[in-house]
Image 1 (tube, rainbow, N blue to C red):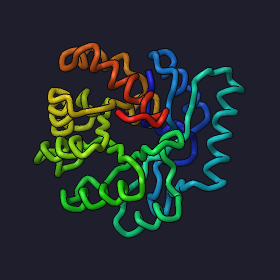
Image 2 (cartoon, rainbow, N blue to C red):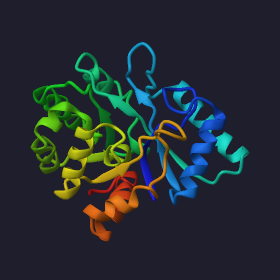
Image 3 (cartoon, rainbow, N blue to C red):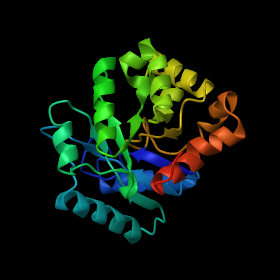
Image 4 (spheres, helix red, strand yellow):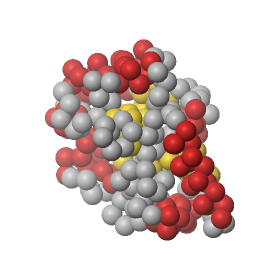
Length: 241
């Protein structure tokens, strides 16, 4: 299986707090059948977590890969980021090529303030698309606009945007509204990908084994393979979904 969204690189955001935690997260991935993960640190959180495409990010990413080799952990780790789409500077970041897409593809993982209006969400997504990227919308089930009107996410699906649900939402760990919205999007087959959005080894751990029984209640075996393997592979190899 492939995990497209994980905060596993230590010291760069609110994810893995140490090298030990990062290595343990990698081991949990392998124990749960995940052999490929995309490291997606928070990007563009002004004042603390910039993580733009630059030398510093490259160094942290390379150091983490070296750390896994040192500990003989054979997890395949690919580069990415979770870009906070802020109206004040998103256009500038796109113009200056500062964003880090998923494994150098056209697919860009983007997140928003939970309170963002539908109008602003659509405006920012159109902006990402205008610069040649395909938006991968991180955890839309957590945005209040989608919780109030899930049809908004169905519109994004029809527009060719990628819908990525969080494991924690489906398991009820991120609030009842997020859980119900995520399950609705699964039941309508509007989701393309399920990812862990893991930050640690306990409350928000990586791996999908505990999620599989729930997915089987909503999805066919073929759809589960697309959510956890097929579509993530197509994204990382820059194919159409």
